[in-house]
Image 1 (cartoon, rainbow, N blue to C red):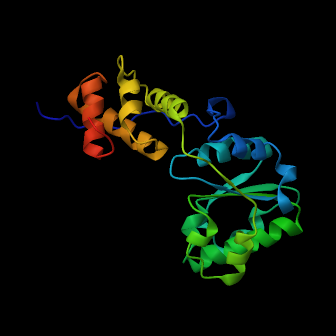
Image 2 (tube, rainbow, N blue to C red):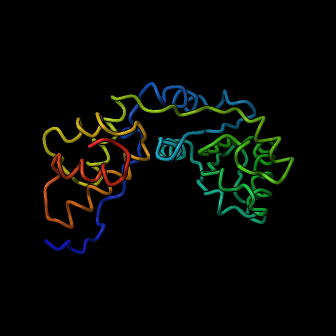
Length: 229
């Protein structure tokens, strides 16, 4: 049967604190985010792989602290001064993408300094530690290396299960009996993979007009090459 053209009309993911899934993998990070006044010099670097929960944590932390959120790739030196308010808060996301981009690096350097001068909180997220960003500005590299860092650890079976449930719910999908259990049993414990996998399953179910069954889900996992079917 020919595959049908599909449109992605799913609702945006829920990113409130109530929608966050606490687990041992994120317990330390969550505890530190709840004590921002304990951050050394008011700065914290949150590091974790793709889809590990950084954006979710940053989203509700920003909402609770009145913080503006900016992607590192969008930073420019000329806007740095406007982003840091006295006694305010700022989130810079995906800081690993600043490496090698002269404007973004210089802006991040200014923001690091301005946050201290103005008593503002600065939360920075990245997939890897600063030593892996390829920073060309030595002063920025040294400042990032000195910033307090907390990691999001790989998920355990319970967290991976809960994340799959949430990802299916975000897409308004109801997986059939045994689907999630089979995926957790066979897939790598990788939350980035979980996101890609649910998107693949969603596309298959829509294009083929089928329910989300175990065979459909496992076929999608097999195509991604991330588990044994």
